[in-house]
Amino acid sequence: MKKVKGPITKAWIEARLFINENKLDQAEDALDKGIAMIAQTQVIGVRDKDLIEGVKREVWLERFWVATEKYIWPTRPDYEQNWKCS
Image (cartoon, rainbow, N blue to C red; front, side, top):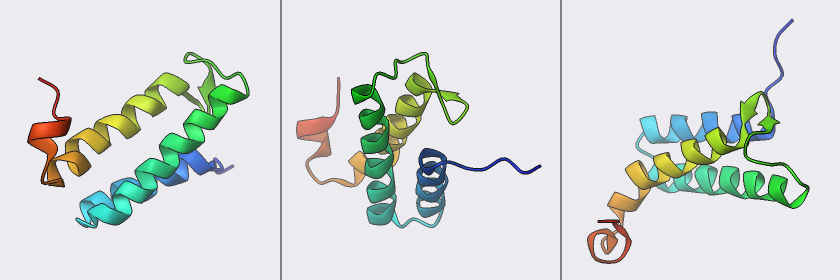
């Protein structure tokens, strides 16, 4: 039986595909969509250690944020001045 992929998994796969194809605007949209879906889970009471689509919520957040920090933010002209954490 094939495992059904949920919307967060699909957003993650889509973002990785766009990153690999260097389509960073589309990757950013997919990453933002994933972060928004994860944020919505907190509203309904899902905690960091709870599983969403078989993965801990905190792991999903880390995946999406690290990808955003690594691939999207450095393409912004003001990244060094306004966004980069020292």
